Length: 109
Image (cartoon, rainbow, N blue to C red; front, side, top):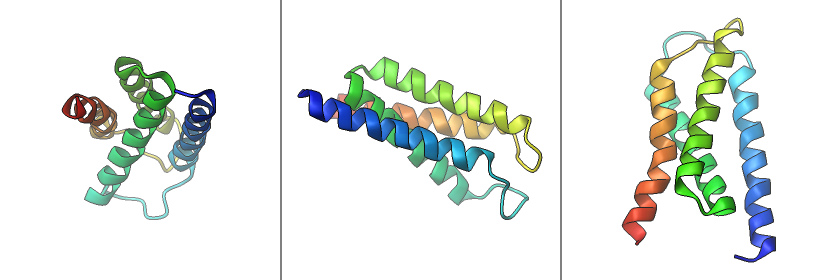
């Protein structure tokens, strides 16, 4: 892959990391039970993160590992922030979103 494309995917990775960090630390607008839409957002965000990492590195395992680990770190961070909730289900959904990149890659081959 050309260096320019790798750089673009790397920059997109940084942007999605920042977006996830921002939405992980801001207080919830509506505190309470998480909704199904919340899980869709988690799944989509970590799918995109894993996809951009993969496009930067061409390494499925690394992409899933880094995206999933970042998801765990964000949930651990939320444990320490008032008005945020730690959720094992969110960690699972984050990993599933990240892993979808691998399944789509295997399907493409």
